[in-house]
Image (cartoon, rainbow, N blue to C red; front, top):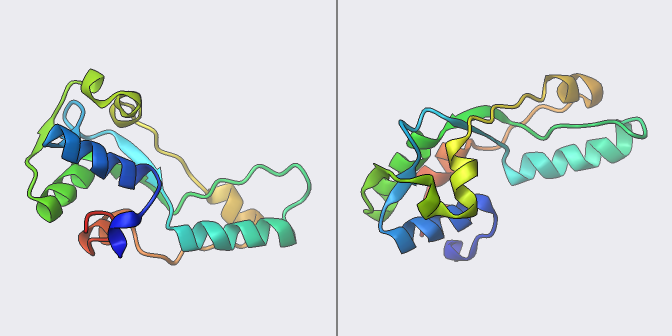
Length: 132
């Protein structure tokens, strides 16, 4: 069953269902970095195998997924309307959804030879991974 997923996106979908809206903040142009769990797991393995002690690695497969795009896919999969909401309505997610948080893994990729290959966040959402 796919509805038992954990993590930030599963929690966001649950919050959206409580609000009755696939929510985004402002114009939704702000971004979240994302990585597929299989890619994060592979990076963990490479970190143990290849990274020097004390290395800082970034598990970022996508540098920034627009939050409005996330909300629109959640909307299409759940039937909830996608809409901008006041960040206060989102509790802890308000700051996360309202901030623009792009990140990169360029140095990580070069250091340990990591190349993410898993599906993107939007592909996972489109497949119903977090919404069914």
